Image (cartoon, rainbow, N blue to C red; front, side, top):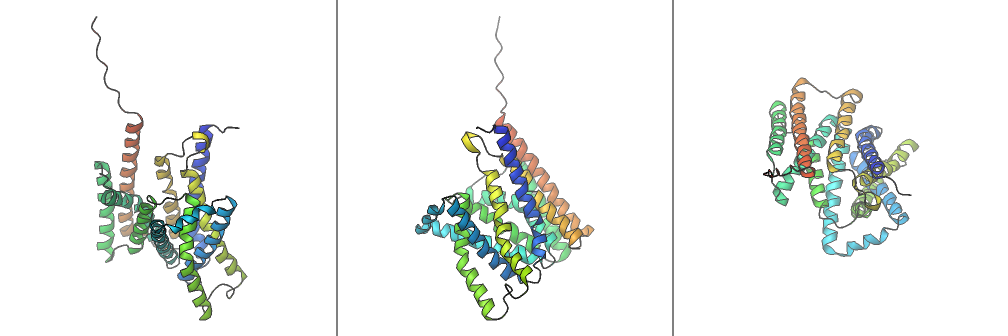
Length: 316
């Protein structure tokens, strides 16, 4: 039975919304592990996510794709992806459990604009006037926060830049979503296992020493890492039998769900300050995103519905 195209897109939109919602609430999960050092949480996240992704790859008969690791170029690409992803995960875990969840949300608000700049620098893409205005507003927000608080919002910048370069390098990766992510975590696995072994030998390991609840939560980081990534892959991938996947403009709007939830959680649940001075920098960023989104929607409309050339008048 063939599923109508509209219904396929609806399912894709729901999958995308679910992915970004799960990412938005992920800090609540991490907060339950606040007694565990960020390095250990990140290492466990790599180990358990790798195990789960390997099982999923085997279940979907995609393990054969991992043989691409024999190619040196592929190995270098996925090693770079793994390092960027690991740095992003570690920074995010540290931010949430060190009282910087609000600043972490700023990183994912400005990430789309960082992607635009990276495309210009490394891919030779030209920015439209609306995109330049959006980048300028976001830069003004970062400069304001730097001058007002005496230092740049490092957490936000590291998260935005690492995830931006991750997306840029992902464009050059040859594997599909599931085997690609599996390979990234596999290449991080030796370092993660070595660190956890060191922590255990030095008596600072958390797993099995801080109660059953903490052990189960650490093991669960694999599922909470893999689930939104797979939902996102379902939303971004083309639907079956020739139907198109969810439009990129729609995914672009959905991505603001995650940092919005993170911001609300940081202020209301974690009690982090959100002063008027800080709000000014965020408002500039939100204005930048509004300009960026409207410009993207207008450009997509022009692409899909170009203005027809005026027809010549017929003389009678």
